Length: 418
Image (cartoon, rainbow, N blue to C red; front, side, top):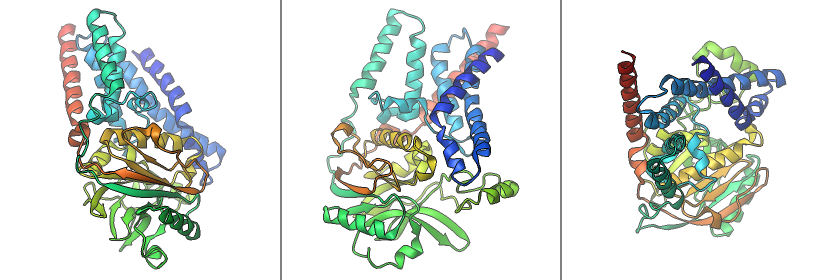
């Protein structure tokens, strides 16, 4: 079983080294130097690879179990769930996210990205042994995934049209933002979205040049001794406060134990206050919207809670310090969320990749704004107040099911050992 663990660990090291090498760029951005950046990135990659090791270890441990077919996808689901909250969580690049590039998206509105990881695991374990029943089961699973027969179940007959724009300033400069905002307004945009952490909100409120424009953007908000990073409807001052803060970049996960570490990096805004789990819905033109900041988008609980009973999703981010590869992965998560919720995702970033994403037919949309390109994009979206099955129940049904399967597998193993 130890050999099985190390096989999984090696596979994990390869996968994560290729997938999140941008971690090195993010750490080095604040002056850690190549050697220290490499060491910290390597430590994170090793930690994430442990989950691959635990998976192959458990597969060997339960080998021959009568629940094996359901056990494999259940282990995948549980391990991804644990990774999403352990040590503040890293819910990045779950297996199910790769359903989007291959258009295997039929399960996303039903059980989400994490549930699609379960389906991938189930298909693989069914394919290990050939039988008529297994071939039929695989065919049905593939049919639902690729044909998406459920896509018309969640359409809102009372949908509203809203012409909305995203701006990508490359740098958070009011002169650039003003110019792009005016261009978007002249293009007919009713609502204009700015990226994450443009400035302090007090500085924005002191400006009068945006008084007659509906702007939703990311700002720092100070309340007494607390500082939040928020997405704010500047017409009403209503806001969502970011809940899932970036460790070390926005908060210290071990309080003052790593105070010297933070002082060495001199990271600005690294002592932010975490937002509440449940927050009041924010409206724009009487339409409730879901507001998600940066990698909050990848946290299932935050996404479901924030997006349930809303008309569309606004996602703002500043990916400029993550290197070249991360923004494309971030956009992939945004596309998955659009399909999961069957709601448009309006995504504004500082220097890319900004986009307005349709949940229905992404291929028909105009091109996004590539990384490093200054500009804006306008699109007419349709609101959708209906909730998909995934937004109603989240991960709970499969979470309960997976724990039951693991419990039954343990009971079966104990009986066989007697």
